[in-house]
Image (cartoon, rainbow, N blue to C red; front, top):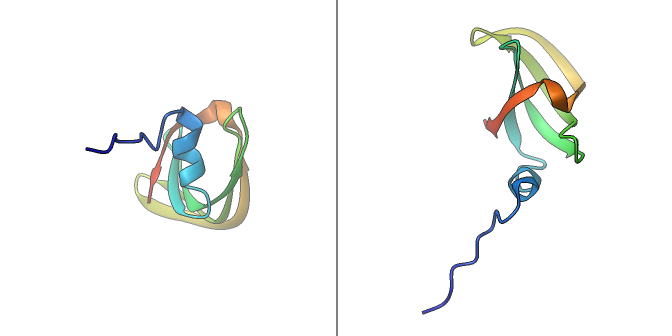
Length: 79
């Protein structure tokens, strides 16, 4: 039987797998940004394209390209 290879052996592997896909990023203040993850760095600073800002699941505004500082992020998940 072949040994299962863990595709997410490091935390940043999971994030790298989400590059160029739609993600939801939630901040410490509860605001969510939904967009296409274009890039990130070791501090989890992230750039989203076609981003929308959401508060309480309502779209507040369409922003286009945004930079989100990593130390404000609590959750990143697939959209």
